[in-house]
Image (cartoon, rainbow, N blue to C red; front, side, top):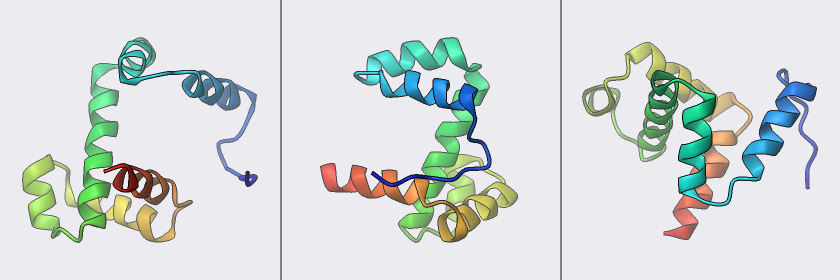
Length: 100
């Protein structure tokens, strides 16, 4: 397993992620995240993930904006993360693609 040096890494974030790693299925994710986040925060994260998937699938910004409601600024930011970020989106999207 690789070690990751992050700007957000600290004890509290480690504890949060350790809790997330204990989740066993989608139902448990719903339970935990509904307690952890506001509905808006969950929807924003889901929107960002959909934008990342659409960008990876080479969809045009206009189509992404229409389908997700995300602003072009948000789409651009996610595109920047896909191209120059820590590769988190890419890792998860690739794993999901391999499952299907």
